[in-house]
Image 1 (tube, helix red, strand yellow):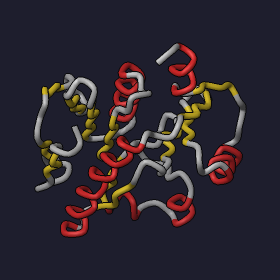
Image 2: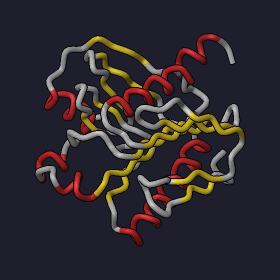
Image 3: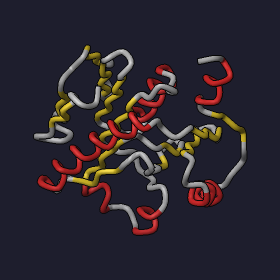
Image 4: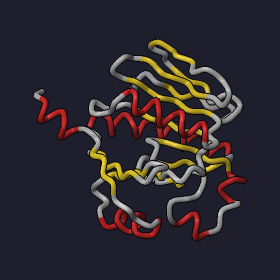
Amino acid sequence: MNATTTTLLSTLKLEIDLTDDQFYQMCQKNRDYRFERTASGELLIMPPTGSDTGRRNVKITTQLDIWNSKSNLGEVFDSSTGFKLPNGAERSPDASWVKIERWNALTPEQQEKFAPICPDLVVELRSASDSLKDLQDKMQEYIENGAQLGWLIDRKNKRVEIYHPGKDVEILDNPTSLSGEDVLPGFVLDLQQII
């Protein structure tokens, strides 16, 4: 892969001043792209994931959704879902989950757009084009904005970084599963077809 190809696969960062409604409308009109916005207002345009990453990502959301349909403890979201974090950033984790009482506390209008809430669980699955440092910074941002548990699944290095509020990052080398701990009681993510 040459430098030009690497640049084309990377996230594009732009300084564009958009209101929340303008940002939402831009995302709705350009559904083939994935947009995020940092707390400072920087617009991030990310390339679509490759087919293999998408295939692995759906295994994460499927497992979460199967567990959630039995427990009814919250709501599961896929990678196309945007959330407005308390710091003003608008982010789209690869998979996420919000406790039902927190979700139900939002108005229907808030639930319809980019919900003004940080998910309780956030999952990022590193794709070939993702910078590990950028994903680590994003995971810290989720934790600082209210996430209770974060999993950064790094397929390239066959490891998982686990994030908790007020704790050091825990690193697992080549794990076969992850526990939802007390955030998602009884949930275990099988990583065998993901890593």
